[in-house]
Length: 467
View 1 (cartoon, one colour):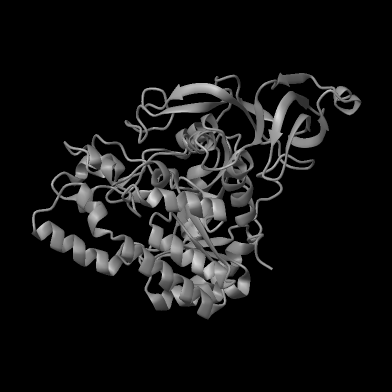
View 2: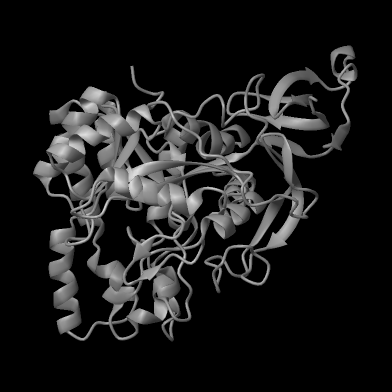
């Protein structure tokens, strides 16, 4: 028995086009599009018809950077795969790419199997994995080839967090050389962690313990330096590079320079760097701890350069780096010592709305919104055109979006499993109304109708921006 749904009368927006069209969905995939009101569209018949008049019809968001259930700083990210993917659906995101973690002394396979066990049967939307490589050795390098065959085609390394995830330049170079051979994409947390640890120790010795010092010791220049170093190591290896959560204008400049040289270098930023700043980190009574993440929030003047980077395509993707920790009992671990505050912010539910607000505010166009939130992350990580667009053959991951509805972001109304909102009280225009994941309605006119276990693991091909 095939199932058919028609979405009628909306403005279909993809990265390349805007057209008033009806969308026919059959057996979980987009079967056809036809201009609304034409005989072709009138001929679409289905058991279920969704009226999208006056609304946008957009691809479901692809959030290529989340951390559900991540162990960090003696605790765990507060969203499980169940709560986190449900919240993602509420926010119009229909695919996440989470990070499986290799622990030092263990294999990549062990880490990946652990994450499969966490996610399987628990997700409301589709998911895929990147692999965090913490321990580069001959066996790890061989395993990278095997993971690519299984559809885990990107590998994250850290120039930060000595003693936890940190890789030195030699380990980074070896992994990059391997990815140059096997087609994988190295993702880099670019901060000079060795130098930062010196500054952390010096700040604490001076009695500078408040959350705001987290931002002061993780200097923008140390992000830029690490970004530059990662780019040059990738150039030596002949490998592509994707720099995650770019926050500083100096780091954007390094990416722009590399791209001008014709290098396969890509950059991601996150909503927190576009909408929040060191003003938040400096909030009194330890409230600033809510905003501790790495890379850290920067002074407000960096925001204009990030928006510019998104417009000029020196930054290609906006992901969330969703890694929530409750204020009570988790962020509080760092009272009296900012270095013990778990690093991470909640945001998987807010991204699509915040970026639509950027459209309203004139920072980006509607099609660029879809490009940086849906199409480019899908292409970057080998999911396109199954994900990230509305076209015949694509998965029917579709959001009916009301561009005129107004909302106020708040912990009282969000669905993430965390006791605060990083955007508390922020007024935005635009709101998700209905969400389909592979043709199944998971949010229906602001009611959750999905279920854990609908979401499927989605193997990925290699980066689609490489020759």
